[in-house]
Every structure is written in C-alpha cells, then in structure tokens.
Length: 232
Image 1 (tube, rainbow, N blue to C red):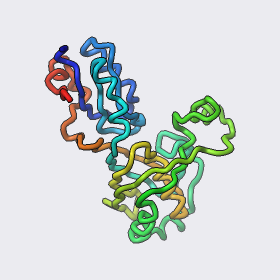
Image 2: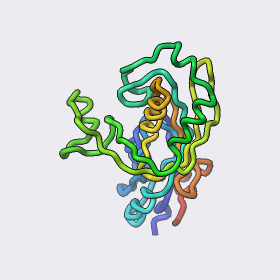
Image 3: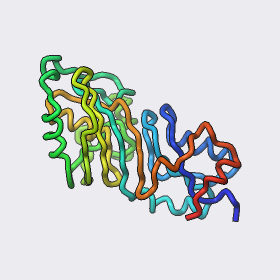
Image 4: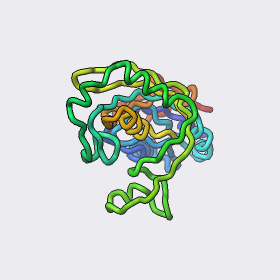
C-alpha cells in the first residue's frame, strides 16, 4: 500500500477554496486521487478532511454525513447578499435599533434555533435549481422565486461573547451535516430585527475528528503529509 494513502486533516486558511487545498496536497505528494469531505467557504478556516488515494476517496460519503462543530462571529445590523463579509452590503439597520440589542436578547433568540428546524438555503450556494447552481443564478442577478428549504438539526448553539460596541457576536454551533452557518447567521439577524452576516467562521470538528490534530497548509511537505496520514 502507498504510505501516503489515507486520511489527512488540514487546518484550512482563509482565502482558499476547499478545491484549492486539494490541489496543493495533490501537487505535494504526486497523487491524482485526492478529495475533500465537505466544502468550506473561502472566508472560513478550520478542519478540512482530505482523502488521499483511491481506496479512501471512495469513503467520502461516510464523512459528508457526520455532525459538524463551528465557531462563528456574526455582525449585527448589516446584511450582505452572500450572508458573509465577502459579499456586497444590501441592508443596514438604523444605529438606534442595533443599540437596543442586549446580550439577553441574543440568548433568548438563540433558543429558537435549537433542535430540528427548517433552513432556507442561501442564494450564494452550490445547490442546484432547475439544473443550475444557485450562485451562478445569483451572480447573473436572476430572480430566484423560491429558495430550497431543508431540515437540519442544531444540536447546540451557545453564545461565547457579545461586544455591545461593535455588535460582533461569537457563537459555538454543533449541527447536523448540511447546515449553512451563513443562513443561520442571517436568520438570527432577521429574528432580532436588525439583520446580520458572518465575519469569521471556523470549523473545529467533524464527527470525532478535531482541528487540534490538523496540520497547517503552509507547513505541508511530502514527508509531513505521509507522517500525518490517518489509516482508517
């Protein structure tokens, strides 16, 4: 067996797509069959599971369906078209409205999102409608009459910190596979009546695997990759 076959845990930096990370690993070790097990937006950092070798890329579906954990920072009072800070601002709430939001308001609102909920897919996503990816339609400024809705489970949502001057709110979220954290942030903002978008997003766990055991992309060398492979 190739010593570099298996599962590699990468701590993805911001600014790269998940596919960019796959390409870096592929070039470093000279293996064509390399894949990932769940997309992270370019803005996001954190755990990305990379499958190396044909035997392991076949196991992709096993990891796609596992629960995820995220740390996310959202800014209240400002909405963007992508639901994160990479997008264009499409709405701002009056400062007076935002200033009224308290820590207790946020804690109370978060309870509404605990458990099984219906989540509307964000317009900038890879979900297909009529054979076309939503982000393609969104970039073309085409009207999307009805965005897809799916059931997700928020197992835990906890307020970590709230800055009542910048109105940035940090949350810990344990959720089912397929959850859009950008949509969650958008919906929390809507529920508070002031709008919101994601400014920072970090995936910390996929199933039982933690980002604490991941390697930084900039530190990758062939030897480092092979030594950090998990044979599972």
